[in-house]
Image 1 (tube, rainbow, N blue to C red):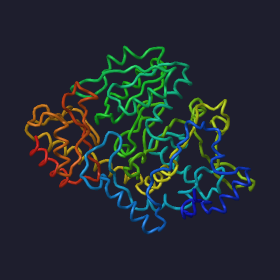
Image 2 (image 1 turned 90 degrees about the vertical axis):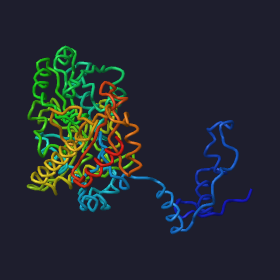
Image 3 (image 1 turned 180 degrees about the vertical axis):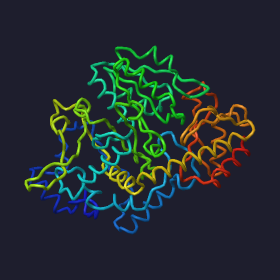
Image 4 (image 1 turned 90 degrees about the horizontal axis):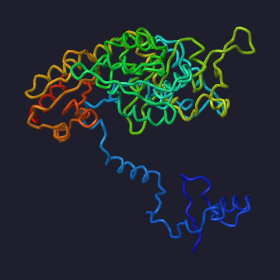
Length: 464
């Protein structure tokens, strides 16, 4: 067989002479010597059926661009889909800052020069702390579901208990992560909700919170969009049993809503996706956990923390890691939990977003979201056969719409017809929560206009 003479411009050390020199250096006669541990019966003996390589940068870019153009993305549709990931306005400067080389390529601080990354993460923690009315945050987690799961494990370590109570209507994707992450030692109990209000069933909650409960976790705003107006009472019930009260919250709602700390939460968590981060496949999420300045909680954080510290020059300060030994980086054996890849680039993006918006900007954004979502709900409720599932309960940006009495009958049919009209409808809840019938979760954020809503309403009238 002739030797491969192709030199790939995007693959290092693909020059045949360089490859031969490397093999000689390690004492290998050929490339297959590097795979000697793989049994012969498992080796693929034929050449892969691959197209010829594209060696021109322009031709490669054109080829990949053609493949990408086959994809359909959210920018091609009018979207009303939320359930944890929705379109929000992204100021241009967010991508300008997170695209800078000192942030974009610096994976972690230790093996690379810092170039301000630690300060940027410190500022992220400070800004999020102000938004949440909490004192301490760690380095960002993978996503909100991971943050919720780790919050529960923190509570379990603090209380020494092995049971958690969560809402039945908790985001099912978050719930799946909890079940996986808490196995095998922490059990989950679900508390029901009122089908007419969407609020947590307090009677059921009281019956399930006990001396075995490490924490009660609620979403506010909830997965069904409603504001949990009983949150303060839930906190009291939780603390009476000496359990931790964990609130999973949407940070963009906190310009108009009281933060969890002000109604009794001991741990606040969630996903900072709405803060300047795009909707992208497999990413665009970032988890946060926040607590008060109490070593009982601080010592149970599993991730890196960034703080201000003295330097060798009197009066001069720098940014560094805090309590490194409690992490799995500091000690694999003594670390609170294993810490893997986090979403630092998105945390820096969120910091840029919050610093640009400020308190007034967050308030104006929150008001816009509430006004537009209320308007959309009112317009949809005026369509024959369509009704709001929880008409008397306040909500933030999401609301449940029921299609049982429409001609279409099912959410699936409604969504398919809307998609044909260039609209992404709400999330189908009929399989997750069958007790709500043919219901759908609609999301309206600050990027939706009155014209967008009228287009949606007209399309639903045609369908339903």
